[in-house]
Amino acid sequence: MNDILKNLYANSLRIILKGLRTGDVEELARIGGIEPAIAAELAEKLGAAGEFIPEPTAGAKGYSFNPRYKLALAICAPGKDRAIAAVSDLYGNCIEKAEIAGNTGSLDFYDHITASYRDKYPALAGLALGLPGLDESSGIPFREHFKTKYGLPGVFENEVRPGVLGFYEKRRFGEGKCVIALYVPDSAGPSAGICIDGKLYRGRDNAAGKVTFLKTSERWRPDSELSLPVIADIALSLSVCFNPDGVVIYSPWMPPDASRQIRELLLEAVPQEFLPSLEYAPDITPDALDGLIQLALQELDNPPMIDLLT
Image (cartoon, rainbow, N blue to C red; front, side, top):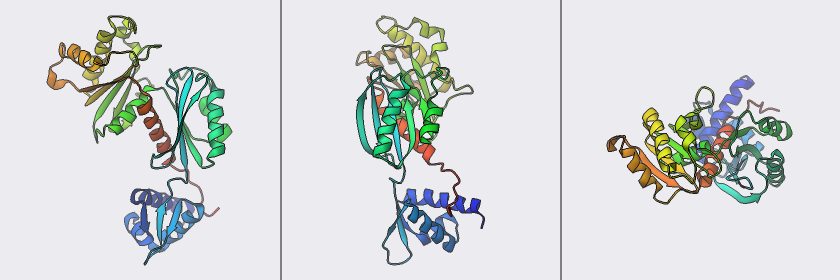
């Protein structure tokens, strides 16, 4: 059997045991459609590498999945002077979380955080950064820097896309659903994120959700009486285009009953039966951090084709 096929089988065993959490070789072989002798050989190699943990069993040799074989670091920057960093295992369980002060517009700030966590957790293998107002044309080489210096596959997003992904999963919308998030900070214009069937929709040019292109958004001011009507207009535009199951609006400055007021404005244009569920949250950070962890873990779920014999 060639090495490519052997690695495909090994990846299959990883996926199966991760889902089962524990299982014996015969069970893994049966589910994966792999010859028992081949499954036993590969499981032993994965055990020797630390990915599988041998477990005593009465019959065939058993293993449990090691969720800390690889770890992910997510860093969410909800403002210009602080970030929240979280380390998670392969099941998304948080191992450590901390708030860190610093200049969130600086590459050195994220480099320092990554270096300190890499020293503390040598198993760190994935990185996801939620950068405030990230612009692909910013000229800051985030992706190249972390790939070259640390060998980490990196995910770099603005705040709202991880936020909508975290919201989708936390509220358990389920398969085939569409959710939209609007992020309306007090220091920048609104932005939107779109999640369809548990996946981020970015559009052809990575510009899906660029609501600043809408003429409506030009009227937005956080201290203006027009603010809620403008946000309602943006929500209406997105709702008409995507007919979502849910809309969440994140903003630190809006009134507590913002979702009610916006819903009333939407009802002036759309019949109630066509309105999505509508929620308001003052802080995007918890959902964005959850979404960043998911994005980092998605990268780790696609391991490179490495020869197990080396």
